[in-house]
Length: 336
Image (cartoon, rainbow, N blue to C red; front, side):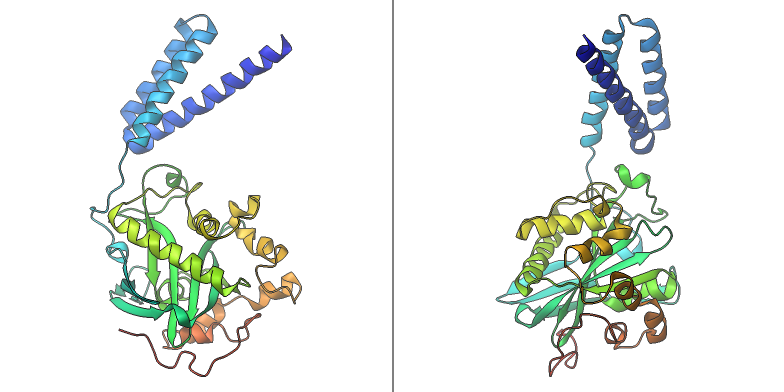
């Protein structure tokens, strides 16, 4: 009997939680009228239907219908997008060389005042030298935006940021990110755009870490990113602040190409993910962690670099774990 009572209590808690989520989903992704109607109906059922197991089943069934409706909502690439996410990137390959169209390289006077510039750039996988991780903090030290950048000999780094695709008039909300309000968007960019925007215009605290991973892994993860970018151009997907955000998205790509590491709470509360990577030896461990973190701060370097052509070089000056220089590093520019 105690076991059955415990199961009944657990079932009740789950039903109430799902019902509350259903009300929120109807309010955010449906209408306030539908949300209020669901809530009032659930309350009426709990008052008038007996025994309690029966009204719990009725509310559970109604919540399941809401879930079915919610999952039927379709993402789209055809909306009135904000200019900075108006275009989706596309990738074409010629052996080890690949060309990316719609690489974003805007010039920002402020976060909202900018000159639009979309470019086509060509890279050679044979010239890949490694990958780096940016962490950008805009408020709480517990939450950050994570960005991966790949370094190539003879070319500017290719940086890809997993973000929300916002329509004109929309603003990002962490709460709304748990529902179906934003499409998933991969910003394929120059570091003078997506990183400089954060260091110079938004005033965020940005850190840059060299990833100590095999070159083969860096290459495989990049190829997986490029595959996803091409897929999203034809098959859009919803962004989700819990299951598919900037950090869980990176983890998914890594899991696709290599043995996954155990889940850790810092993957979700990602402001502490640099400490997790340090513990796992994925970033430089020759220095104590606090010293590594201090030397990895690049916001001041970004401000000093401004929009200089060698922005990417300047923010890496003195960075721990630097890769060995090559004779042609960053000299030939980007293939067009």
